[in-house]
Length: 177
Length: 352
Image 1 (spheres, rainbow over the protein chains, first blue to last red):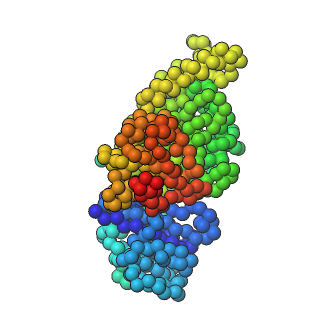
Image 2: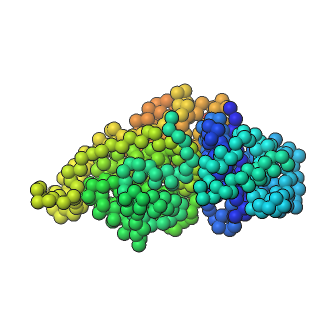
Image 3: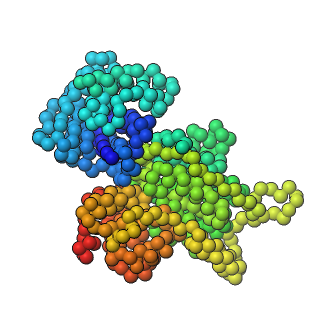
């Protein structure tokens, strides 16, 4: 019986909602209970976005995450907003290309992944989100990493199927980092 | 088992409505329910249905009134301020005794308010909203699966009792995605001899109307209508009980508040506090019997709401104030945290 609460936060356009959707689908195809809750309020209109994903072996209670097990931060305001909410023993995965700051907590594991730079170097500049998500799956194995392709096929529309392979590559890069 | 898919709550309502046989949608966009209209706009033309974005909420509810008079399954959806605009039409539909489905994905109010989730339209949904003596069947989903199943149920009940069914959801359940399967969709079909379908010269014409200038006739209509409502109150209350068997304290919550409350109940049980949850699924008819039975069992009630305290009045009425009822709430688009609810449970256990 395990429940993993993942909060992903960043600017609009960085693919935070998409990454969350991927994690939710990953749980779905592996027969887990899942919930995915996007921010849709004024903060979204101000340019930042976040989403809460819960993956569990038992039915999900509240879909609202107050204290995440895993925080994915793609910009400094998001890190500052949520850093102290992460549970002791939790994981913070951040994009160290975009966030220069260090996390001042001893009781969480912090992964500094230069995801934006890695994505740029690999020729798919917009997939920093999936590199970070790969790292999440390594550090917080709430679902099996295997068959990312199958998961992506489940929700990426056919006309964008060409993007599945690069998404898989990005996930693998983050997982191996 | 049917295949599980991930869907937003709003999309689940739209898909379920189509599966329930709804082929007529009239609406006007407003956050946080716009995905319903967007889904309908995409799907209806492909299946020979009607999607129409009217010039206003007032227009769209009157289009619902017109279509409902012909006996077809029809719906509209909006969010709080938009529902206020539809109130006149809701009263006319009730006064004409015809079935319709209306969705309110609530946001904070009053006035233009905000766009974040709320439950502050409880009074409006359960006590009227429009003018005159009337009721709507009010269904309160707490999951994406229930957004679908209660939409189908809502169409069935509307046809059965010739009433409006309202899905009273909130921004969170509307926006969130959860796995859902449609295997249980049970579509009931009712004869509609009252419908305006054209006489073809073979029968006396039907009239759908809410105007009765002779007070004795209008009174008779009201009494007749409330006889029907009595049957609904007898037969249709729905609720869920959670950890109530040995409960000494009872949390009452619906919709998203019940999800938060469940977490708090689990946490309180871990501290040794015997607390349970009653979740009304129908807000009208209110699950009075369940609450009354609980009043003989528990020491006190806690009403958890995303409002300044509206359902709490029905809790007090249902329990005939036999036991104290306290309020645990946030308003204006804020949601209580499980910790806030837990604190309220602890206070109840301390007798405060």
